[in-house]
Image 1 (cartoon, rainbow, N blue to C red):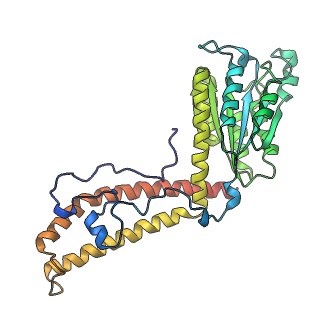
Image 2 (image 1 turned 90 degrees about the vertical axis):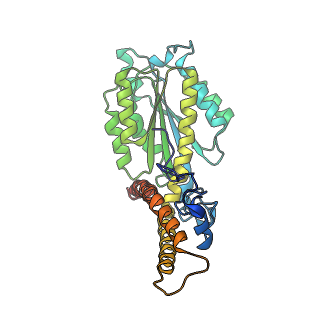
Image 3 (image 1 turned 90 degrees about the horizontal axis):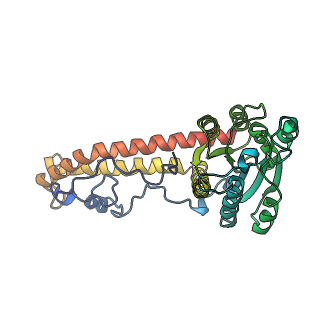
Amino acid sequence: NNQPSPIHKISPTQTPNPENRFGIYTKDADFDCIPDSVEKEIGLDPNKDECILRDCDPEKKRNAKYDQVNVLFILDSSGSMAANTTDGKNKIEAAKEAISSYIAQAPENVNYGLMVYGHKGSNSPTDRPLSCAGIEVLYPLGKPNKQELLKVIAKFSATGWTPIADSFEKSTTVFSGHEDENNHIILVSDGEETCGGDPVTAAKSLKDKKIVVQIDAIGFAVDAKTKSQLESIAQVGGGKYYEAIDAAGLNEAIKTAGQNVMIEAKFRSCLVDAYIKELLNCQSDRTLKFTKYVGTQMDAALGIRGHKLGEFSMEQYNLLKASWDHLNPVCQAIQQQTSDAAKKAQSEAEKQLTQ
């Protein structure tokens, strides 16, 4: 699932009936389940949902260190990456170009790093120990420098074996000093582990350390067995799995993964800043205002207080009640979806921060 975190706007499962059967209570421009005419009466903006978490307000930041985003690309440079894809493009060259292109256009406030494996020795059994141990951080975590990155990328080729598990273990040194920042790993591989390690267990172990990290995996022209392993890595790593069959697909996968990193980073920063509590409190307060208004009008319409408020009549009350009866199930469904999504995401964010 490549969808961004679900706190921006959760659309109703059904929308208010457009027919004018609720009179002045028909319109709900912002789909917050409160008729526009009532919003005006209780001091809300009918054209804006006050409880939608759209952006993070910099003035409300409470955990600035968590705002720093760090992305480590782990690139497979094993012998199989020397082959061509269906479009005739060499896989390792396609991967180099895709990563270089993405980093060249990436936000300047994000730190990037590049780790490579499989570029040492060869894929012969005699060279296996050398190749499996030859994991290198060729571009240390830091601000992107396109020229430096191009120099680094030109220095290696695809030759050896695939030590994914040990690459995850080595990544702990990359994030040293950045443990409580917003760390991400994007693994690009065309094959499964071949150096005897267990990359799924290694990914889980990395998550269990006191490092805030998410692991995404991109399968590049992979077979079913490799796909299954990479999917499992992404699952235990709290990330997503992407798949590409050619150079164009890899470009798109890396671009999408990078975009989702930024969306997720911004969302989690908001969560850590306790925005979720503010969101849920806002919904609760708004619903309370609405129900109080409905109760007041009901009292007036039924004559419980012995007088009527303005021009409000039994007919108007019946229209309002009919509108509420129609909107209430929708409103409850939306708020339940929002609440469930918010609590789940908040729990995950807090879990990472306390590890």
